[in-house]
Image (tube, rainbow, N blue to C red; front, side):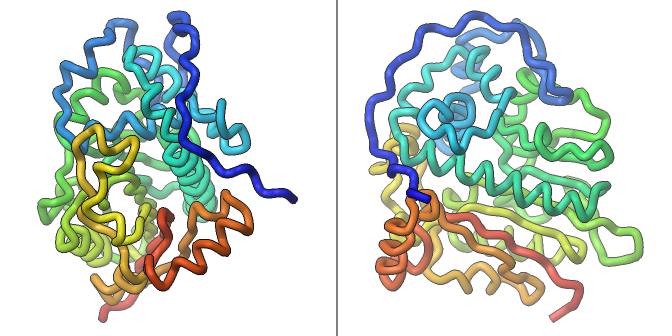
Length: 317
């Protein structure tokens, strides 16, 4: 099979203004009302890092026009972009990042479905959720879901995505502060009947300091029940300090502070941690992308951009 052509940066054509549509009824993700205005995003006063939530939202809402084979069918994102009235064309102009988001969305969906197939009544958590809505794909009818982010983000989310399903809830969290696992009320211990937890943390940790990332991984390892999974995205440490050169992140003013120099760094935080899977977006570029990444690996130390799944075992050190 021929690989799909690699994306190149280009100015996306501005589509005709979308017609006002009724909120999409997707359970917990249904729009609150038509009271949202184009000024809602501005009134949220999001700081640099929280403002990056528009990047995945735009990609999931409209990225399939460029990468139809990665279409994620995100009805919630499409509805939110229309309701926010935000100009997302600048995000879509950065096609490599659109590809990254759609690729990781598919990978997270696959990982989540596999986990909940084995644990249909377990809990899922999206740390640093922004305006993402993974539960629309991962609802088993019996599992629970928690979306958590900084207070200003959750205030905006509460206006746009109010909780409707009794098996879901929302909470504020600052992952840079120790004790977040307990504050979120997540299950602890490995006793009988304690279900493992599936956690997504995408587009978050690269903005943390390395010590803060290690603390987050350590708290997950110390607190999560055996069999739990943490899916997070990673980039090479060579990207640290160069966010200004990133077409989508640069305009937000956010900066990359953490990258991976060796994949073993991910499990160094705690003996319970195990690297269960690592994936690279290079797979989207076919064999040329895989070969080039293999050639660059000694210098990069990790994928240019990738996704990893960490698990916790049942033993102590």
